[in-house]
Length: 250
Image (cartoon, rainbow, N blue to C red; front, side, top):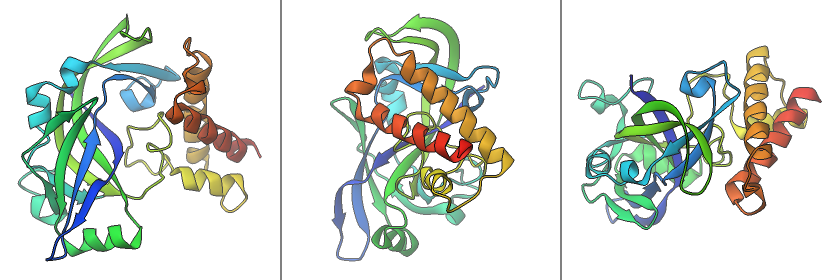
């Protein structure tokens, strides 16, 4: 059964049009290995799962075409975007010129509704998160860079792109680049607030922090390439893990 994933990216090449709309570009979907908590991929029995995203899947004609002419939403809707809810959730659209740009899929888009433009201008939402589905094929393997993985992404298909607050888990932390609407999966900021005594975590949030921290620790400490020494996203993951542990056990 297809699973839903959310991958984050910054807005790039931002241009304001004369009519007030904002044109921009998103770069998503690098190939390679990504680490998720077991719960995020339907395996709560595992602390973490490394998923391989093959280059031929990321850059297949069908996968790239599936991100064309899709809705831009303000945050992720509770369900996928269809003709039935397009009018109520759409604040913009992706264009049809989806193409490969080096190691990324480049997607031109338009923020067309005043609510999206205001959210961007105010700083409330400055990042993009692609909502897509993929089949997870379970099976151990080793990626071309030598990373061991437990599952492979197949049949990547775009559904929408959400304009979301910047700095939430996913942009700063590889664990959790698949976000959900579960309130127990907090933002990085809320974890930091708890770490510094500005907020209290619920039991559900503590459990979620524990799961994230355990997955981050496992991924970082068991990486044979010691990628955290040179990979900025993993360094960020370490920082988030440290904040998470401080929040949980202070």
